[in-house]
Image 1 (cartoon, rainbow, N blue to C red):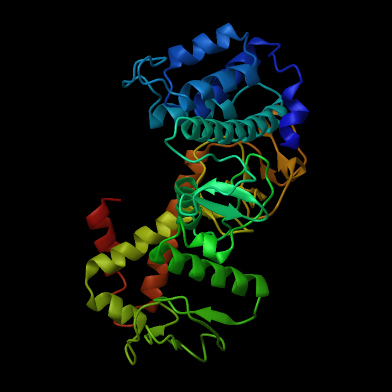
Image 2 (cartoon, rainbow, N blue to C red):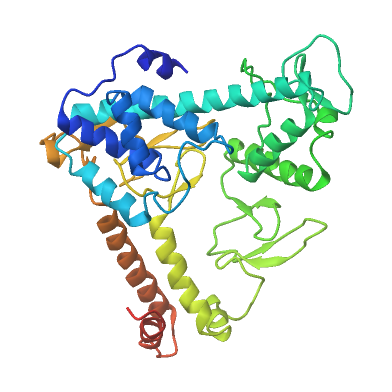
Length: 398
């Protein structure tokens, strides 16, 4: 919210034609499902004011009027190829590096502001519904409502059970465990166990317990801690070279698994022989998984996966509780001093700020493909070194 206030009162009008094109590109990427004609109309009406245009479009989307829609829903939104083209144009824009950085910060602040406006919208709808007798109020109250209709967050906030339940589903669906008060006056308070039971069913509760246990173990930073692939049981194990199997002690699991391939124990057979025995799709799947992993980055703080479609290489984690900033090219935490920008002659850091994302992805995918094929050939001890690559090329025509 501090970032939002910082830029809220500043003049966001563009000063040049180049900046106007850059702003339109940013807006189009943010609202790629909005027709280009509608975006242009909003930009013209607001004299290319970034904040006013962004928030006006976000209100049109977030407050969508079904009876009187602001535009006709059809096939006029930007396609994937169009989005990629826009991303390339932004990377090749003549806008200088300082303006790029400034615009990036402004868009991040506007995303935060939009999120806050959405929360306010939810609260307004809940309060309106409670006044009409359809849903309980979200706002705090000193008088306790019906015990089954609301849940109490610490210290004394009463929240709609349905809203709390949907929030819990969203949090658990992201493999997280911090279920906090959704009040419009953020306090970060949680819910007592007896209150949680009002809006979390048994299945969600089991998942939540697993994620909480996993977070506790991760925060403990225990060296040599290993997990079983079939449940959340963890134990301290020696290196894989001296202990290739994981013996799960969970009473509902008890599966002995291979720590190398994460399948059920297959001793004395090797992992590669098991993969071969299961047929060609297993080898092909291994190649495809390697190619997919080459495209996916992981937040180096919370582990959330992400893929970049366009824009600069300074990435911010989408998880609200994390917001870690790291480089897309390398896994290092960074600020703008980490980068250089060829288009503007800004030569300081070691990684490019802007580049052709598709070319980078293609290069990394091809490298991953060759690496895994080479690895499987080295593992193959039966003299069939050419079969894996030939089989892959026949099936995927590469």
